[in-house]
Image (cartoon, rainbow, N blue to C red; front, top):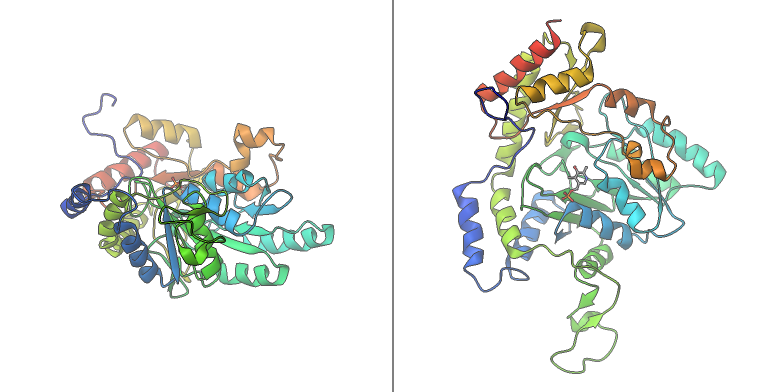
Length: 394
Ligand SMILES: *Cc1c(COP(=O)(O)O)cnc(C)c1O
C-alpha cells in the first residue's frame, strides 16, 4: 500500500458468508472430505440451474477445458480456434492435446469472438482444406457470444463447440441459462475466487450428451471406473476396478463442492448486485472520456467484469498512464486481456502479431474497473473519482 489512507480496491473478489463457512466446516467434520456425497449434490444443483442434462465438476476450468477437448477427440493434426481476448487457458487446452490453435479476431462492440470474421475465415479454411475441428467461444465479461449463429456455422462446417463460460455462470442467452448447451457440445465454468461464484479453485462442465458426460467423468479420475456396467473385463473380486483410458486427477473435493453449493444459493443475488454496480458506473461515467460496455439485448450478462475503453480522442492521458495513476491510488484496475498470441510462449510458436486488428485496438484501450458484489458505493465513487482525475473531464 502506498501513502494513501484508504485501502486497496481489487478488480474482483469473493463474497463468503457465514453459511458458506458452516457448509465447508460441516464437510470437514464428516467422513468424506473428498470423493464423498457433496460433489454430486453440487453437480445436480448446477445442472438444474442451467437446465443441462449433465454436469461434471473438476478442480479448475482449465482442467474442464482440457478434458472437454479430449472428450471431443481433439488431438495432433486438429485445428482449434478461439478468441485472442481471453485467459490463456482457452487456447492452452488445445495445445495440451497436441492440436494447433488459432485466433479469430473480436467484435468491436461485444469484444467477443466475431461471428462475421469467423464466417469469413471458415470460407477460406474450407477452400484450403484447413477447417477447425473445434471452436471455443469465450463469453467475455459474462456476456454470451452469439451462440445461435455460431451453432449454425458449426452445423454447416461440421465443427464442435465448447463455450468457455468461465465468466458467465448466472448469465442468460435468448432466454436460456448459459450452460444449457442449447448451441454447444460442452460449456465450461470457473469457480476461481474472482469469478461469479467460487469453490476456491474449481470448474465444471455441462453437456446434454450422455457419452461426453461419461467420458468427462472417466477422464477427471485417472480414466478409472469402478462400475461393473462400464468394465471391459470380468470382475476378479471386490477389489477390482479398471483403467479404461489415460485420465488425470482433476477431481473437485467435497470441501470445494460444499462451498460451491452454498454459493449457488446466492448466485442470482450476486448477478443482480453486479448489474446494479454496472448501472451506477454507466451513470457516473457519462461525462468521463471512456466508452462504457455495450449490452447485447439477446443476453443477460453475468457481469463478471466492467470493462471501459479509453476515448483517446478526448483525453491527453495514455492507457499506460491511466493504469499507473490508478494503481498508484490503490485502485486495482486490470486488463482482460492482452491478446493471447502476444505472450512470449505463443510468440515462440510463431503467431503473427498483426492478424487481429480489433483485438489490438481493444488491448490499447481496455481497462477493467473494480467489480464484485461487495464493492461499496463509497469505493465505487472513489474509483470513478480517480478515473476522472486520471483522464480529465470530457
Ligand atoms: C478464469 C478463466 C479460465 C481458467 O479458470 P480456472 O478455473 O482458473 O482454471 C479459463 N478461461 C477464462 C476465460 C477465464 O477467465
